[in-house]
Length: 84
Image (cartoon, rainbow, N blue to C red; front, side, top):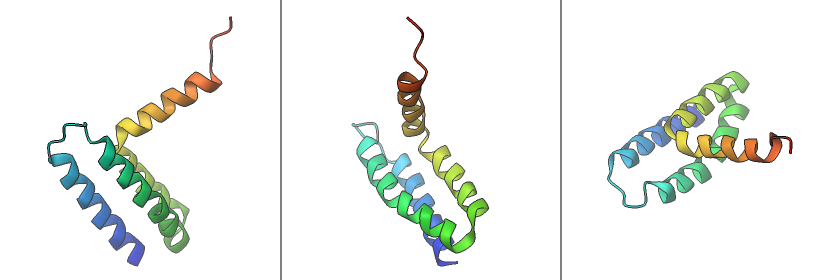
């Protein structure tokens, strides 16, 4: 139960950070949220199970969608190159 409380605090903090204007388009804040969110995700999975962890991962990905989009673009450029 502690892990879910921490996740909700993280989600509220992420929404508050998103509402504050930023001249760097929130990338430094996104790095901090990712650095705090990954250990928290593992804690949720350990305490509540994989399905709850998956829901938390989807909630975090919906808030941090641009880092996820750039991650998929980077992976696609590495693994799915067009044949020459």
